[in-house]
Image: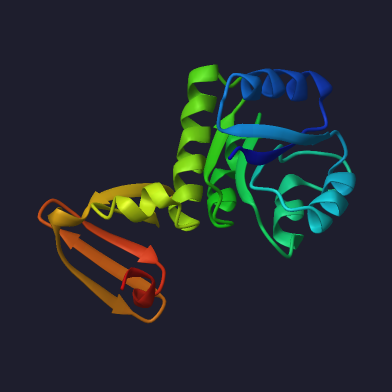
Length: 179
């Protein structure tokens, strides 16, 4: 199954380049592209999208506004010329933040991360069969933790602390999601 992908950028050449990159990825399918954020927003409210490749600085409505206002948020990868919005973007639980110009290798890594996260969250048969790893979103990235390395997991309200011999990870999540 290919992940339904939407590209939103006010610069058409940027859309063309990202679309070419997407053609070389077997896991995704571009279902629509938009040069206007407001049109994309209306489309996204009505159509299920797995991955949203989104520019930030656009006329009328920024990519950050689009993502904030969506009732059902797809996995989002910001692709922008401005590194200054990275912290704000990660506060919105984006999968990745790419700064233009983006190389194919960097784009590929980002899509692979999104695909892995998607299959884990959707309880894909591969993820169900492979209970050796725990995928945790913390510190603005997704960490893959071998369950054999976990000393203990502790819940405290909206946070989960996962302790291994090498590190401690604090994630904004609920303990019942790990049981």
